[in-house]
Length: 191
Image (cartoon, rainbow, N blue to C red):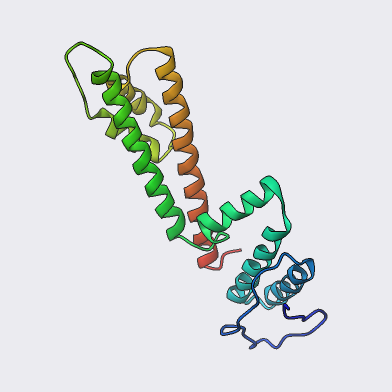
């Protein structure tokens, strides 16, 4: 059973640092109990304790949701520990960039060497292209276009494939940057 503190006044020095809470069950009463404690610590501006109860509340909420909403809650937990981990989004971002870079290289090789009887002109421009997609800043599109022309074969299906990969790469990068920024905000107790 979750701790019940509805209507209580908490002393400013109270801490739940070493407290062990029950595993989440998806019970609405548990979510409300953690929300009460989160709001009490928010009122005291005890940010670390507020964050602790936010996580517990989110665990309960995750189990109460169904379908796509539950999947989004779980992704939020997995990829960022509900907005409190800096290393998780960095690791997943790095892994995603590595996988996409290998895919760019493989497709470049297939397009330049594997599907043609002409002399193989395999160029490492796909590495430059991948780096340019990793940090989606305005102004890099021209450089990105030049890099893709050097390694990407002609053809409608190749262009469609590259577009899908670029959208995936930029979405991954933007999501990771957002989650890292959120974690930094939470780490430094910014409201």
